[in-house]
Length: 93
Image (tube, rainbow, N blue to C red; front, side, top):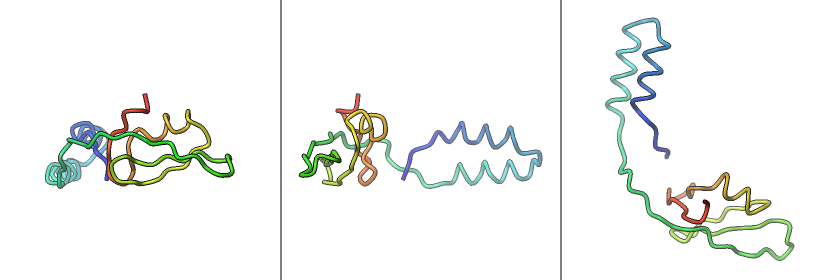
């Protein structure tokens, strides 16, 4: 699951579609798409040391999902949200 800016998507579709019928259909599809609550849980990545030291792994404080990264900088850049539960990670700033 991912949250999108539906208004920006509609504007892009309408701006790139030459057929009015298609743009109306796409706009209707986006408008009628199921929505989700934007309130996400807030968690943090908890560092878990690896035995080999080659990889750094982190566990989501909300759901326990594990990610692996080569460095702390990699985690901060690529993992601002948990891919499993969607929690926004506070310690990625």
